[in-house]
Amino acid sequence: MHGGVERFPGGAITGEQLRAARSLGRIEQVELARLARISVETIKRLERIRGPVDANARTLKAIVEAFEGLGIGMGSGGGVEGVWFLARRPVAPPPPPSGAHRLLVHGALAPGLERGRGYRVLTAMLEDEGLSGMLILRQGRFLQALEGAVRDVRRAYAALAESPLVRELETLDDRPVAKRLFSGRRAWEASDAMSLAELGLDEALVHAFHPGRLSVAAALGLLVQASERRRARPVAEAAS
Image (cartoon, rainbow, N blue to C red; front, side):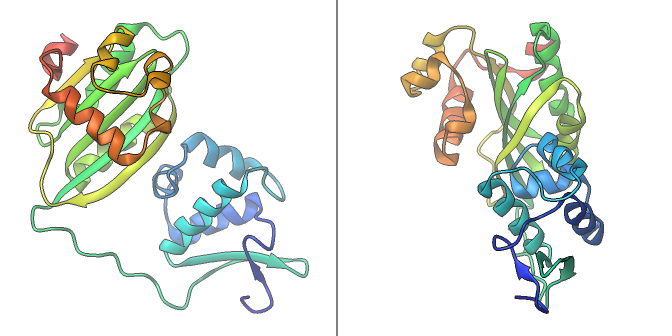
């Protein structure tokens, strides 16, 4: 309880509260989506709602915990809705000595998008010389790892999130790392099911590629294996 106001999940969360909490935290929708590990489209949809939002408990919990990580609480009760600064704001752990950061994301290309153009959209973010990573594209869905300085990784993520050609963008993992796993910038388009099967991917995901069903460890392992295959081409070559 906070001054007689009940914290989620006991009370409903409204679209007005979400907008107010984001304003209090001074963050954009893209950043909130990254912290909550849900799509930007979901944040936009919920914020447009007047009154209690229509979302499942898992999504609401992720949003509330993302705000709490910023030191912001929200709740409702007795006809009162509110947002507030928590008494103690969490302190983020210092980055490792290397200063490297890894972001693992997945999403889908807009329906009907010409394959070559979609491929260029996804590889364009890797043009920054400071970034390394790996991309797997299959059936219009993609799994991608980005590594580099946190500012460069954030810039690349924002470019993806703001592209009208990218849908359902979600974060699987986002953390500082002691060292990079990917030494170059590579991309691999899995044009047939066999190419993914060779990497040991679960049979159900081979034929209906959906990276969101993978654990962080499984997704990262898949990208590492793909980066070591001869079919994985440097981005500059793949986009030419």
